Amino acid sequence: MTLPSSEASSARIAMYEPGFAADPHATYDHMRQAHGPLAPVDLAPGVPATLVIGYDKARRILHDEMRFPADPRTWQQTIPDTCPVRPMMEWRPNALRSAGPERARYRDANVAALGAVDQHALLALVERTAADLIERFCKDGRADLLAQFAWPLTFRVLNDLIGCPDARGRRIAEGMAQVFDGVNAVRGNEILAQAVAEQVAFRRAQPGDDITSRLIAHAARLDDVEMAHQLVTLYGAGIEPLVNLIVNTILKVLTDEAFCGDVHAGGATVRQALDAVLYRDPPLANYCISYPLYPVDLDGYLLPAHAPVVISMAGCNNDPALTTTAGDRAHLAWSAGPHACPARSHAYLIAETAITYVLDALPEMDLACPAQDLTWRPGPFHRALTSLPVSFAPTAPLPD
Image (tube, rainbow, N blue to C red; front, side, top):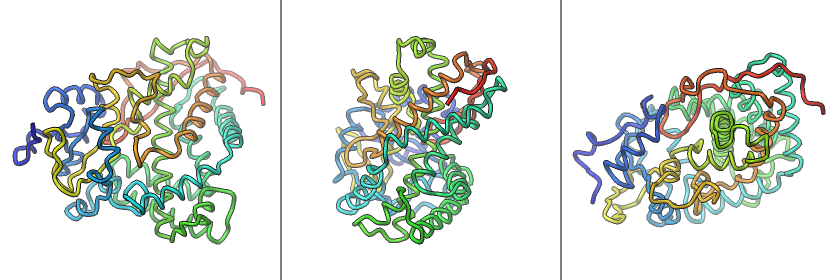
């Protein structure tokens, strides 16, 4: 079987429309029935790609850097700067968009900078931040846990780790959100580039005990442009996906009978709820993009040269041919192979601590609207709610 070429446009499934965001799993099922484990999609109008929804094929692609490199420079020559998904896909001098020795150089620097984070200090930072945020709304009886808890918590924690002043960090987060949504993405990319350049200059002049300073001091000797793109990657992986992981897991705990009540009763743990979300609805649902240098025949599926091959972590994790369970943590939410997420332990610690804290502080919390009334942000890459309104009995803050 081969993917269509000339007639592919009519068969392609649009991943940028609200219908996909509202029920992506129905779309994955339709793709599977119509096309098998590799489906023709449009990431944006006029931006074709192949979406991998077969677990085994995804793992083979993720571990095959020779046939499936992550460098998009040939592809992007035909993509206008105004394309809404280009900022999420274009070449940057970082590990995510490089291969071979250059990828190793960038990755080594990031792994070293992340590895020096004090986990005990990080735990304490998340707890302090969670306590401060919850204190601001716990007496109200209502809150939007996305806008009032998950987003500001992730923002403040990441800024602290990176050593970035809040005002600059807000500009970075604003630009990153526009890039993820594919709405005003060009402007978002401009805001992002300017703010991270300022952060690099700031820490070159005033080093500290933070990720930016450790990247600057690393033996890789990253220049200003390379440094800026390391920070783009860290913010891209550290804000949007982590915010959505926290929010989606709280939603899971509040609505799924397998977890509702059991977390407080000890029958299930927050870590189990996190893994269930990472398995079923990972916050970065479709990404891990590669660009074959030449046409690749993958078990009869012809993948064209220099055309994006996108791994659907959500689709692959829910592949009917997959026999593992969420408890096995065999999901692809952290990717796999040479581009696997190097901050996995940090993300688990932040999300688990934040969720545990808010569940303990507001034990009678419930959704403030029917679950079916919640809305999801459009875009081909993320699984992100627009808000998570909850209600609870007004309560005093947890004691220090």
